[in-house]
Length: 502
Image (cartoon, rainbow, N blue to C red; front, side):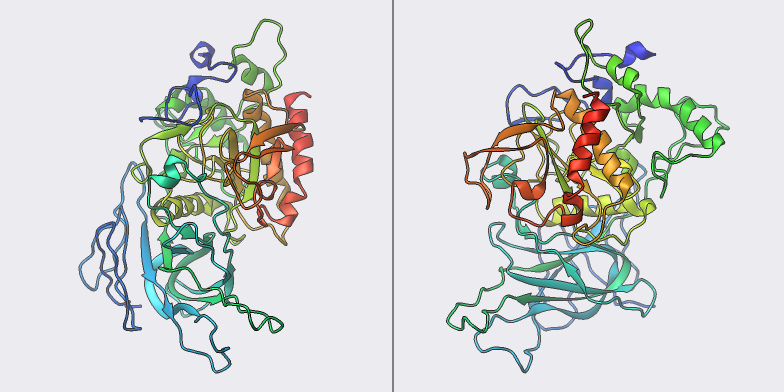
C-alpha cells in the first residue's frame, strides 16, 4: 500500500497528493489545461439589472442559479457532485441627502432596507479594478424568517491588495472588478447598505472631494448546501461514514474512541484515492511524510509532517465556477498569511459555507479565475485546500498583489485586527507551512528575496528581502492579516521550523 504513495516530483512529493492531477511547472508562471417575500427574477450570466426608480429592483443572479416561478422562492439547483449557490447583484444608488451634508461633497450611495432571497455573505464591487474606494462601507442584515435586524457592520474596503498581479493573464484576460472584502453575515433575507465617501477635513476646505468608484453593486452570496458526507471508501457497508469536517473540533483534540477507529480504518484508503477526489487528505507522521518523498540515501529532510487537509471536494467547491486552466510558478519560497476579514461570527461547522461564499465572491463577483488563497484555516485549526491545481504544487494564487509568484497564500478565516486569533489556528499555520515550505526546501525562520510585481508598497522589479513566513502587510500597505494575527507570526515561524526538525 505504501508503494502506491511514493513518487518523485523533484524534491517535492507524491502525485497521489495532487488534487487535481497536473504536471509540474518548468517555468513561472505557466498555464496548463485541465413570510411571503416579493418574487424575484433571474437573468443569464453577463446581464445587468438596474434600478433607477428607487424601488426594489429584480435580482441578478449568476451561474448555477435556476429561475423559479413568480411567487416561488428561487433556490439554487442542487447537484450531487457539487452543491450550487447563487449571487444577487444589486446596483447602488445615491441615498437621500442629509440636512448636514457639506456642499460639493460626494453623495452617500447604498440601498434602503429591502427584502432579498436568502444569502449569507455580502460585499461591494465596482467596475474599475484599479479604482480605490475611499470611504466606509456598512451593512445591516435581517436574519432569515425574522424581523430582527443586526447592528451596522463595517465591511473592510481592502482596495486591490488581494488580487492577481498586474500584467498577469488572470488580471488582464478577464473582467476583473474592484471589490471590498467579503463579510459573513449568516443566513439572511433582508439587507441595507450605505457607502460614505471620505470628505475633506475641516482644516482642508480647498481639497477636492474623492468620488466613489463607478458602477458599485452590492453582492449577496448564497453558499448553497453542504456536500453530503462520504462513506469511507473500501469500508464495510454497515460502517458509519467518516465526516469530511469535524465541526468545531480542533484536529489536536481528543476524539471519541469509536470515531478514532473509523478514521484509522479510512486513512490508508483515503491516502491512495486522494487523486480520485477524496474529501480529506489524512495526516501523516514525520516518518510517513519522509517516506512519501524521494530523497538521497541518508539525507535528512527538513519537512514537517503532512497535516490533515480538507480538499475542495470536502468543502463543496463547485468546480464548474472556476477557470479550467491552472497557473503554476517555479517554487514556493515564502508564505503570506492573511485574515479573510469576513468577521468572526461563524462556527467551524459553517466554515465550508464561508469558503464556498468567498469562492463565489472571488470568481463571480470579483472576476478572478478561482479562489484567491492557496489554503485556508478556520478558527478550530482545520486546514482547507484553496485554489485548485494540487496541494503539493507551486500553484499561482491571487492573494498578495505584487508577490503571488513563487509564494503561497494562507487565509485564516476571521478578522483579527482587534481579536486574538485562536491558538488552534496559529498552530495550523505552523503545521501547514512546515510541510508545504519543506517540500520546496524553505526554512520557516529564514529570509528570502522576492521580486515585486508592483504594489502600493514596492514598485515593479524591486527586490525585497522579507521573512519566509510573512504577513500580507509585508508586501502591500494594508492592515491584513490584522494586528493581532500579525503579532503571532513569530510564534508560527518558530513552531514551523521545529516541526521541520530545525
